[in-house]
Amino acid sequence: DAGVTQSPTHLIKTRGQQVTLRCSPISGHKSVSWYQQVLGQGPQFIFQYYEKEERGRGNFPDRFSARQFPNYSSELNVNALLLGDSALYLCASSFTTGGNTEAFFGQGTRLTVV
Amino acid sequence: QKEVEQDPGPLSVPEGAIVSLNCTYSNSAFQYFMWYRQYSRKGPELLMYTYSSGNKEDGRFTAQVDKSSKYISLFIRDSQPSDSATYLCAMSEYNFGNEKLTFGTGTRLTIIP
Image 1 (cartoon, rainbow over the protein chains, first blue to last red):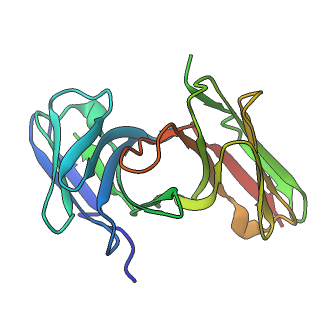
Image 2 (tube, rainbow over the protein chains, first blue to last red):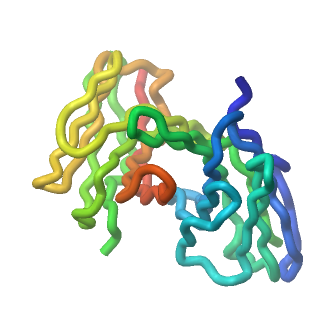
């Protein structure tokens, strides 16, 4: 089975531009979460979507938005990019079995804002 | 104060040694505890998943959770050079349907052959 896939793997944008990152969850997983990982730090929670509904939002500005599609894939949009948005953006899909929920991460999209 | 504290290291140990990695946390509502391994420029890989207090063993890896002390540990026995990576602890309050993970900063581990 394919794991969580993210595209693109690398991206360079200019300050003020907008970017869209994409994520395809593991087949059968209905929950998708997005995280931002700045170099040398742990991932920070941005959004979680379950069955196309937003279930959680982290402490990020409104420039960040996301959505989930009927096939459970997801997009993360960031508007008016700032230099500080440069980071590895991670998507995680999760499922629940036996009462436990495990999250599996993609390889990430490395965004550089110049 | 961060919700989850983790010594960033770096930590270097000789091959075959026992490695101990630790995290402390302040949010008593955390119930689910995870350890992820992250190689350079890759996404985190789930290593261990535990619920509430207790121990869990999987091969050379043992995870311990002490909720009374708000302290979790990961032990790696017979460490190998391939174990060289950044190890992230993660925790969550909820389970099904609302699964925000709160991560530590990660500990960078190097196993010296």
